[in-house]
Amino acid sequence: MFFLIMQFLWKYIDDFMGKGLEMGIMLELLFYISATLIPLALPLAVLFSSIMTFGNLAEHNELTALKSSGMSLFKVMRPMLIFTLLLSGGAFYFTNYVLPLANLKSRTIIFNIQEKKPTFGLTEGVFYNDIDGYSIRVDKKNDNTGELKGVLIYENNTVTGGKTIYAKEGEMLKSENDRYLLLRLVDGSMYEQIGPDKFQNSRFPFQKSFFDEAIMKFDLSGFNMQEESEDLFRRDYEMMNFRQLDYALDSLYVIDDSINVQFVNSVQNRFVILDTSFLAHGHETDSIVGANGDSKILTPIDTLINLDSLHNSELNMALSSAQNNIRNAKDVIFTQATIFQGRKSAYVNYKAAWHKKFTLSFAILILFFIGAPLGAIVKKGGLGTPLVFATLFFLLYYILTITGENMVESEVLEPVWGMWLSSFILTPLGIFLTYKAANDSALFDREVYKRFFSKFRRAKKTAATNESPPIV
Image (cartoon, rainbow, N blue to C red):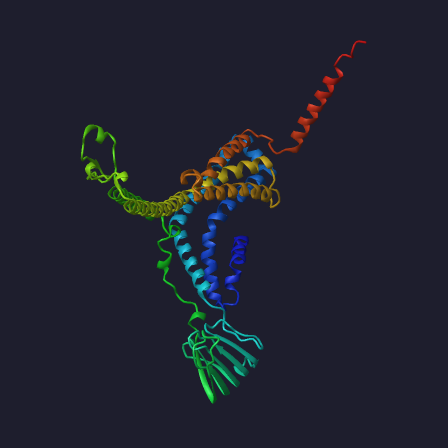
């Protein structure tokens, strides 16, 4: 969890720097982020702990003693299997009810932080431009008293041309609700152009005025954390449980069906459908059945016009009208295709999120049946060898999971195949390792492989010496 949280902080460090965030906000954000990272950390924890547990039992010959007393590997695994089943059920409850809330809270807090402007702070001799419409520079400042020396302010205004204000002294004050910054200027002057700034080649007079004391007010609402409504993200598929996803999928299906029916009816109403058999049989009218079951009357044949009978001007008008109709039809079809693709992507995302509610629970079971037999075969406990094997198999699981999700997102695979890709591949591996561990296989014993290759080399050498010498 520590490394995953640090990865998150490095990702959003640019959004957090200089915002003057309170410690309570950061702790709240890290709490919700920790909850969102559990689906990634929990399978690794199960895999690592199962390898370590059975590795310790095998390393200290406790697993051998249990087997010699008549207990099979499956009977030894039974208590931890029951615990893993309970953990899988808790993981499903977590992903279905807790994770959507954590995603909603964390997404809202991150959005609020990103919308918050950096903390207001003036640096001596440097222009400060984070207040919209103003550039402020001071020669000297006192952080304790808020006193300023040599205050230069440029007001950017595209209509009037802006103002330039200079004061020998100043003081920074804040309103009672900290929403406004009051800048009290003493002994200064103001330069203002009279006339629009867009006429750069024209001459307009400047107005110069002096003041003994002036107060400028700046809005600081953008520098505070605003409590944005959670409704901005509530309808996202990551914020729903599987029942809400079921309802959303049904709604998407009904809406898509309605849109397709409207499109088919629109096409049938805008285009003439002809059948050359009408001419052969002398039919003048006919009808077709529309997408919604209504009968559509075709254009009568006697209203068709032969292009050869038209004059050049009429022919050009007819061709121009036909081109416009074709362009309009192309735009309508393109728009419909864009809408269809967008709604299809939404349907795929919702369907993938629905399957994701169950993949974590199943992944915990699979990684347990990989880790426990692997620890019994490796016969190494502690933090060394188990960590190496856990990292390798978790990387395999993570790469398969990300690959499946990306293939679903790019619509290469159906959601059911992409979201369960890692489970489909790792399940046979878990069955294989469990079978090998139950039969006391030395799958990762280097000495076994050394003896095998040495026996193979001796057999090859013996075969070479037994060959009869050539007859001269």
